[in-house]
Length: 277
Image (cartoon, rainbow, N blue to C red; front, side):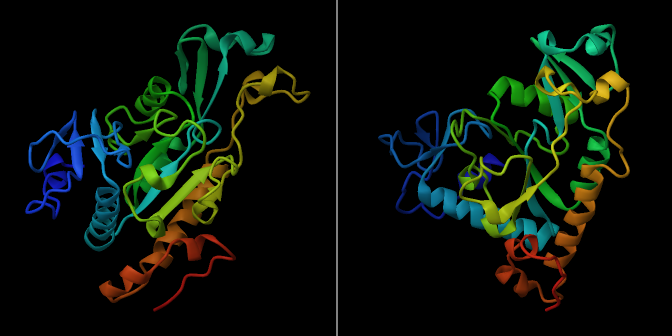
């Protein structure tokens, strides 16, 4: 998001201090007293806080631009067991310890963990990027979230700095931190319970386990068998097909003004049938 957009809110004449960074209002350049209702958006710009009015205004503006100008919806992606699987090195089974010997494609050692990227991730992100503005949302900490985002999107082509972690929301996940209207947001996560207020936006994906889960599974892991989930028939490939259907259904209207009344949640829930206008 461009800082110039933030500083051009409709509050110039009677400044409501909508956008504040490092304690200074971006509009009037004054130092307002901290408003408790303001929300932190450090993941976009360090020190950035938005008032409730600013959040609502920016969500509407971002959605209108995305829908009408770029024909894009918004996609919020979980990391662990959705795009990657990670495990502590100390929890690797004996048959998996070959993975830490030398570099292997799709694997990365990070601190005390080893991370495996899910098959089809690169193709998924490349194609989904033509249809959605994408966010990462993880219950991991900031350094972990950024490290994995860098692993799957090294040039910030798909996510930019839109990496939301438990720093913003330590208990549950919420779309309050996503600067777009809920009617245009699709969530993909392997865990339903972490989204208590946004079930209608949620698509549940099959969990990805590459390593031996908790070290106690009786069935051999992908890593132990030196195999992996299918790229062409795996969960991400199937998800991409469904996301394309949702996008086509949302933008099936010929009249641009009809987009202002469309709601992606009506396409996510129930048997999907593309609606004409």
